[in-house]
Every structure is written in C-alpha cells, then in structure tokens.
Image 1 (cartoon, rainbow, N blue to C red):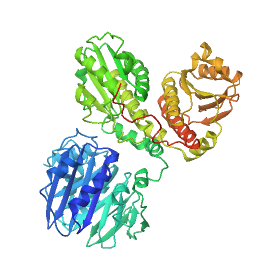
Image 2 (image 1 turned 120 degrees about the vertical axis):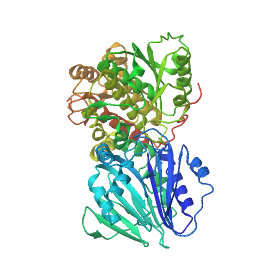
Image 3 (image 1 turned 90 degrees about the vertical axis):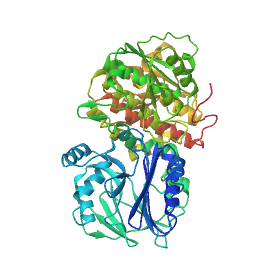
Image 4 (image 1 turned 30 degrees about the vertical axis):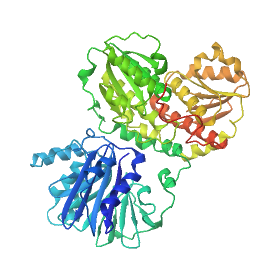
Length: 592
C-alpha cells in the first residue's frame, strides 16, 4: 500500500527519493510525489500513475549539495487518485507525507475552515499540515507536538517547513516507519527496509509513540511525550527480496499476515457509525435495478458467491453468480434492469473482461470490483470500487479474496440500507494470525500429505469458503481437493469416504450449526479423517482447530479463511513446493 521515503544529505536527493519510491512499487500505488527543501525553498512535484510519470515531470529539476526531502506513493483512500489528492500535501509554507488514517480529520477540518483555513484536497492527510501551521506560533517542534496530540488514528508522518528549513520532523503511531543512516551522515526514512537496503548500514525501527526531528545531521528521538531517548541502532539486512518479504518465508505468508491491516485500508473512508458510504458510486446509479449478475473467475468467482449470499440476505435483491468462461458462451439473457458486477484482482482477466463487454453492449449498468486502478476492466466498467489490497506477489490469491468479500459485504449493506459497520470494524482482529494457532497448523500439516484427496465442506457463505480453501490447496500443494456444500455429501460424494480421504469441515456457530455438525458426523461414521475448524469441538472428529466465539458469522468466516490459507501453505511447504510460484499458474490470466 502507501509508501514513505525520506532523505537528509548531500547525495543527489532527487535520485535518492525516486530510487526509494521504486523499491516500494511492489506494494501498489496510484500516484506519487516528493518535496525537497533546498536553501530555504520547497520544491514539490506530484503525478498520477507510475513513478516514471513523476520522473518525467521533474526531469528538469536538479539539486546539488545538502538538502532534505520527503516522498510518497499513494493508494487512494480518502479521495480519488488525482494529482490534488496525491502526496505531499501543503499548507502555506509546509509539506507533509503520511501513511495511515486520521480518524478525526473531519472535525479538525471543520474547525480550521471555521477559522478561515482553506482546503484543496479530499484527503485526511491535508488536515495534518494545515493544523501544524495553525498551531505554529513560535517554535515549529512545539507546533508539531501539539498537532500530534490532536490527531487520532494510525500514522507515519514526515514533515518539512520553511520556518525551520534545516529540520525534518517525523512521527509514528500504528503505521511502520524506520530511520537508517550511513557513515557520511546521510539519513534515510522509509516505511519498510527495501528502500534503504544497500544505501545504509544501520537502522532504527520506530515504536508507536515515537516522534522527533533531524537537524544538523543529528536525530532527536522522543517517546510518548517523555525525555529525548537514545537511538538504538541495529544492522540492516542485505537481501532486498528478504526485506520486501519483511522476514516471512514467502510472499504468500506475508500477504496472509498483512490481511488484518489491509482490511482497514479497504474500509477506510467508506464506513462510519451511520453505515456504508461509497464516493466511487452514487446511490442513484442503482435505481431501477431488479436483479444482479456477478461474473468472475477462480478466486474472484468464490468471492462473488459469498457476495450473492450477503446481497440477497441484506438487500433482498436476486443475485446470480456466473463463471466468466462459461457465461460468455451460454447465450445469456441480458435484461437492462440487471446490474452486472465483475470481479477481478488484476483487472485484466480475459474471460471476465469479455463478459463485461457483452454486458456493456447489451446496455446493462456495470460495476467493477478490482484491485488495479486504470486496468482494462476498470476503464470499461461504468463504476468501480477498488479493493485496495495492494500488490499481491503470491500467485495464489489471499488478501485479494479477503478484500473482494469485504467490498461485496459493504455493497450488501449499502443496497439494503443495513448497518453492520460495527461488525466490519472487528474483521481486522478476526484476520490477525494467532502465533499459537499457526504453530498448531504447522504441526497438523504433516498429517495431511498423502491421502487420496480432500473434501472442504461448509454451508451458506462457508460453502464458497470451502471452495476457496480447496482451490488454495490445489494451487500450491498439487493435491486433489474439492469444495462441497456440507448437505450435499450424502448425495454421492460420501461414497469416497475412508481413512485416506481428508475432510476439512468449516463449522459456524451462527449459521446452521446443528445441520453442519450432522453432516460432519455422517463422514465420521464412514471413517473419513476429519479436521474441524470451529468454535466448538466435535468429539468424533480426528483433529480440531478452535476458533474464537463470535456473534456474527462473517467474523467466523474471516478467521476460518485465514486458517485455510495457512493450512494450504504449510502443507505445500512440507511437500517442498515453491509457495509463491506454483507450477503452470500465472497471476494475471489474460488468455481464454
């Protein structure tokens, strides 16, 4: 997602900042920019799209000698991906870059506007720099501290001001930020290791509540409003890919773990205590819609199936879910009072794209749920809701699926005038990987390697989750796995049940608990080897992973999603497979 880079030193600062931003491209972004303080003047450039656009815009700008700089790659949250909304953001004589969310920015903005302060962007970030200048009476550091004490939320901040042109201010709460240094007094800031590998030798990983400033080649670090603290330096790793993986064994593992904060990014600016709000699509767009068709492929199709349950339940609108590769050739009936929703991680999925073209030609309203802005599907659809999952390097999708389901759940609330935002806000916690549980899954994985196949079973939304769990296992372990509705086992598939058939049972306490439990017991009595994922143990099954007690089935859904992803990954690792690059597969399927 969004990335931060900062630099203080004498070595071609523009190049330092741009090179740092390029190391963060793997995280995903839709715009980029930088500000450089040189001889008391601020020089700033911003551009929508790739970093090369920023390079071209600033190609004639060059800086020699000592300077201070801040830079940013943005993934749109508050406000569309435009140059005005891109970072850095400005006040009269100051510039700021920021990762995270300022939860109380609206009240800050309202108060400042009442005092004559004007705002240009739609972002929460602009409130930081405007508040800083409003607080600035004499001392810039005092104004910075006052600003930090006012804003609420998660943030990593770098700020420059012409009032103190030799100083770079920084702060961290919730969002990652580090400081690195080189022997010749060069100082670097970044939101991850990757931009500083090969440039610096030592690093400080800032803790929540850390803030301070750099001046005269010295770092002044404060912690939680206390006295200045000593900088404790550690040695930087030397492998850039390892840095991008942030210590995880595979990108897929990193992406499973980061789903918790990614869910917050998906929700950011779209929900509050009153319900769901989409600035990307106006409510009038849905007028006259009598039913919905969701079209997608693979993992996105499974997300669409979850969405069909949620929309029908919450909005009472009839929904059909179609596989893109089949929909194109079934001579579909396309009525103009149907909303056609397409889902794609890449926005380039060929079968989904061609199905979208058919819907457009038939005059249907079209909505894309996608992770990549400016992709073919996004450009073609009438409206788009971006999932904000960031770059997903593992071929087997994890966080893309999680965010697609969240967008569909929000859409179900939006269309049905429901308000489950208090539950949605708990999803980030439901997606957190419990270390003890992960260790248990690692141990269990050795027991599920050599059977003749897997059944993943569940009911309601846990049926498409079973399909997705089976797909994850197939993709990276190359073991045969099938997802089934639990109630369908007795209609044929149960003939396969024996000790070498492994069943992964998803058992919700909030939906059809007794019926699903009965289906599990049917398999148990046929001597199938069963792993139950549930808040309550069934004594007749072989293995059990206990989930938390939740009062809503979607919180159960997200915790079970993480568990099935980890299980597939750990089985694949034990089999010696390349988890991130499974054989025969590609990340973006651009052919039929």
